[in-house]
Length: 412
Image 1 (tube, rainbow, N blue to C red):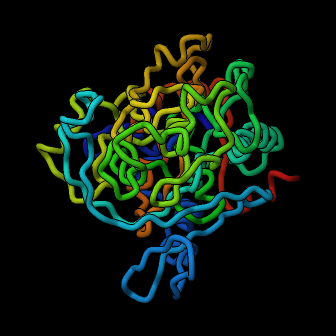
Image 2 (image 1 turned 60 degrees about the horizontal axis):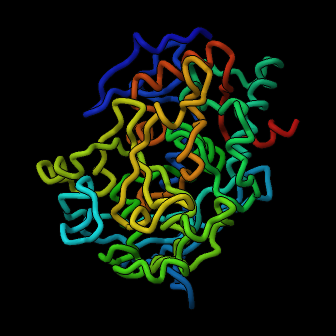
Image 3 (image 1 turned 90 degrees about the vertical axis):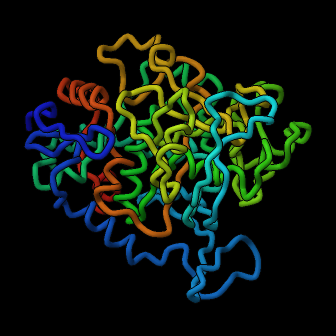
């Protein structure tokens, strides 16, 4: 196929989103007819994964009021023995941002706004290298499929396609502080994290995605309104977080510190976590002026590759950067400074602080429709679209079909 995205770009809401013209590698504006994505939506609508008819005797659960309970569940990545745990988080209302008397605080953490949040499942820990390397492996898998002329992407199924990251330009940078299976995966771009969630969703039939900023902060606070989920003081930080003063050897194995009140580990520190939001120095003034009904709508989709928002602080951060309301704005000029490629990689960063940036999986109780999923799984910044198209067209990146048959096909 030939690649020509530019002529197919269309605006969707407040953001420009890619359109699915013939030859396009990034699905968006046109109707989606591909089987795997429709199956993922339909299966998620009927999914009972994480739902029980009785409240568990112990552990977290969410009473849905109709005889059903959201409960923790363990998902196995198909074709592997790799598992991860999802924790139920109740819906509610919270105050997003930090109050003016929180000390320290940054101006971009306000003004505070009231946000409603729907029930959801949140990964117990950050995405690990063990998990992420399965997605990285798709680069070689897709190249092999291409060489053999099998599982070809065409106009009928390209909505089910993803791109896979190239091999690391400088592995010694990304892996300097470890690549152990239990460490959080880091240095991937927001776009790469989004593509991981699409890949995982289409092979499991459960809708995984990155969170909006509001969803992330709600999950991090765990029902609190203090600076940290354990209180206003950083005195107890050693019990809950990996940060600059106790992380001499890089990020730690996930889940080794105390969880927050929702049962989530490492929401503060270890690795900062991507959200889908574009960053603005004006903070939440736009939400103050144009309130939304739900946290899933509290998002400004990126119109440029950067700055975007990561949350939670990392092993490289000082305590104030680990506060529930603290924000980190990405900067491609700095974070990709050592990348010699043109265009620079849409999948990897080459400079700090990216070795402290990863992500965590979220899943809504009520599945999203196909149109909404596109924004969570695909780039909304046209420059990212161009960069991805350029890389794939030049053979620098993997592109392939994702469905429930992929794990078995990848073994052959």
